[in-house]
Image 1 (tube, rainbow, N blue to C red):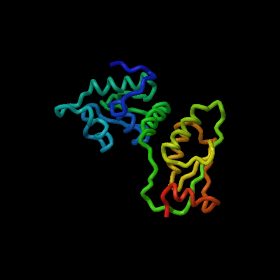
Image 2: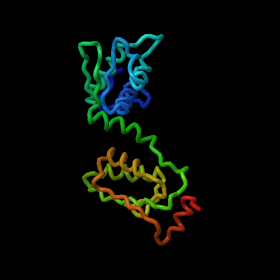
Image 3: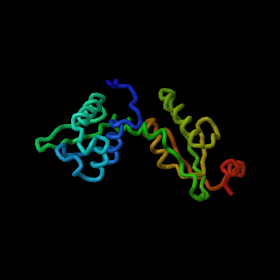
Image 4: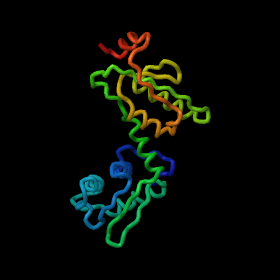
Length: 195
């Protein structure tokens, strides 16, 4: 099945797994096509989906690499010693992060540290789609909307906000404030079931 350049790949597909393992590996992975399972744990995990009846499906693996290269998500080259070096491109990094967007959550199980995270953004109209997507995701993460571009949560969210900001390319347009106390916080404590 041919995949168009702008077609979203299924989350659990083998090519998406390649992208995820490349991200975990810092963007570059080198593996032996002759003995793919002999590499590091990350390499072993990457090729695991291509092992069938204890045999490495080399042609299918190379086909998937070519498809990812056509979509400019990776670069790869076969080396003279039988190894292949795979590099995640900037576009590939952005694509694999989109797949993580659906599963991102705030850790609400930890005890509250007494700080409110007040997030404000002023995203220009030229990035309206990103602004709307960010707002929708913040609501999905159960941030409380104070205003259209001001949200608050008692939960640690810095990594998640950095992740969202990088996905939507809006980091320069948002700020996080740490607030200990404010008028009306009792209402929000009840909203978030804080004691």
